[in-house]
Length: 178
Image (cartoon, rainbow, N blue to C red; front, side):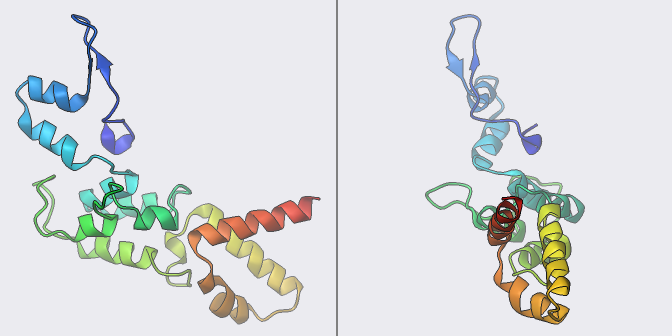
């Protein structure tokens, strides 16, 4: 359930005494220490972290292409005090969180490395749909202005991060609407 967005910090109320308890406390009380350990280990995970942990390149690509995956999310650690980035999780050889997965997955690591690179023709497929639409619009504007396509593709787009592209594109749309 957590891989699909369930909140492990959400407390439930015990009907017997009205006490608020977390899923980890329930697991400990039910004598399931492995579940309590897993809940503690994945605290702070986002969908991106879970996809990296699953080492499933197809799922990871879907998460990377979601609009919620920003540059900040790619570099975000699981805890404010440090924790792990998604690429750290994917590159661990010994992963106690999921014994059924391979030690590492070269395709998963390659996807995460590529996703952290600036926009390029090679990496554009890992960018969210909204970003790809913004790139398409910028290319059309370039054509209208008579600019060479290579100028935009090679010298403008690589300088824009996932976050920048949306911010600049939204600003352009707001000016155009007025």
